[in-house]
Image 1 (spheres, rainbow, N blue to C red):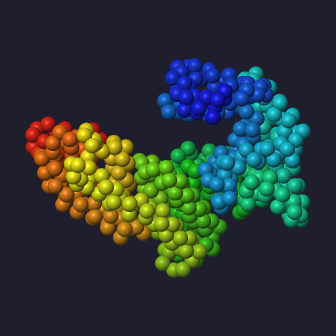
Image 2 (image 1 turned 90 degrees about the horizontal axis):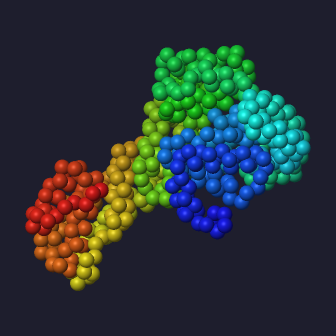
Image 3 (image 1 turned 45 degrees about the horizontal axis):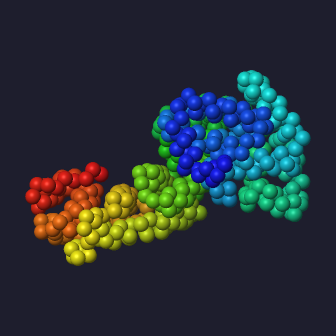
Length: 469
């Protein structure tokens, strides 16, 4: 619920109708209010919905900033949108930032956090961004030193270590603290390395591959334990993150897993496999919400990553990496199995012949049901293209074949039903043909669908018009 009992949907509609300049002004005023510590119920919700609306309309929501966001700025390349408990080398879950900030302000450095927040807030309100950044830089160094002392004590106290896990709401609390210390202590170095890599790497291949490897082996990176952080920096700049493993193959001068694992760059393979596992978890969440273009795009990204790993590295022998990738492929198969196997039945339920007596006058197929099944067919068709790498070939081919046979065999019956329809069932028969045309376009292609559409026009006496997809 929004403030004053208004539903979120009504608030969202209201905010989306505001003029762009009004939205921008309102965001600025609300952020200034937060900096002045003005507690207005619903501010966070309103800000979130305003920014969502501005993004949807292609507007850049300019942020005034706040002390916590400024403190976490060096962490941006190392953040991952995943659950806090899932393993990611040298990365921190974005969802962990708020618990970490609250913990530092409540249990680690409460007075220092209050002082820092007040001074940065004043600088931001005055429009002095440079001063705010200087304050953040100094505070980051103090936090890193304090956390290093704290961690040394925690490692000698099992109860305190367990308490930290509870405070940060993550089983990876210790790893998160270690990552925080490393990122803050070497933030300037990481910024320098990141700048020398460039903003975006379309394809990690020669000569860029050799240049980046040379950069990561240069004195800019003084310690081997910092290499995984630098590899994460590289991955964030890659159009295809799986290409990070090319650095490991180049370092080993071999695609053999044993030789790759023996080099410091071998951790790149682990980083990539963890990223693929994250994408699979994202796929799981998206499938629960319904299939769509976003899901198909994610499935393609997973497919490309799996194929890339299998192409670049020889996984024919047993190794931890080959077992991890096999588990990933099995999980993907399990995730999409239900969707794929449900598709033929859903098509049949919509298109099955029904006696006129079972059809209410003027009844038609539910457009939402038709759209959902059409999207599901598109999803399964996409799976067919990715089937080999994702270990779903057999089930995908079977489902597509069933639907192809059903549509091909049932075409004449649907046309006869439309041709012989009376006033009671004509609208329903026509809606079935409209759905079949849309499904055929997905399964057989537009030419086949156009033939069916013309046949339907003839069956309907020239009155048939396919509904827009």
